[in-house]
Length: 102
Image (cartoon, rainbow, N blue to C red; front, side, top):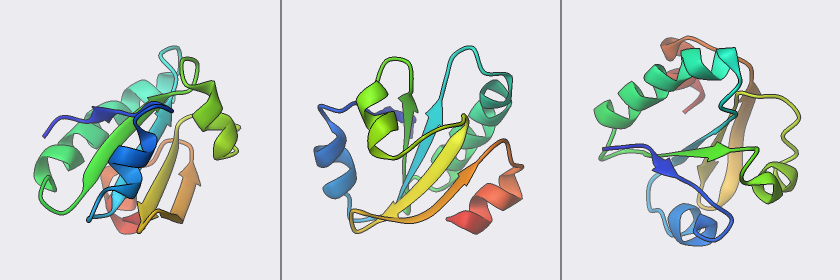
């Protein structure tokens, strides 16, 4: 399953409407560590498509979402369960650490 682009407009439908945990990748197109993390996020999305919804947020285009979650560094990953933040981590991390936070 492809990573869904999350916007302020579709946030409630995608995240709050999900019956599985949601992994949100806050990124910027100019960010080197974000580019390194992107293939890992895509791989996790494909491997866990039945157990996890994977989304991404371009902080430059969706500033309101970045502000809403207090994003001050990219990449930042947030795991949401039942509409609530259950885990959050900033900076690049290898696949095993991303999976551990889910």
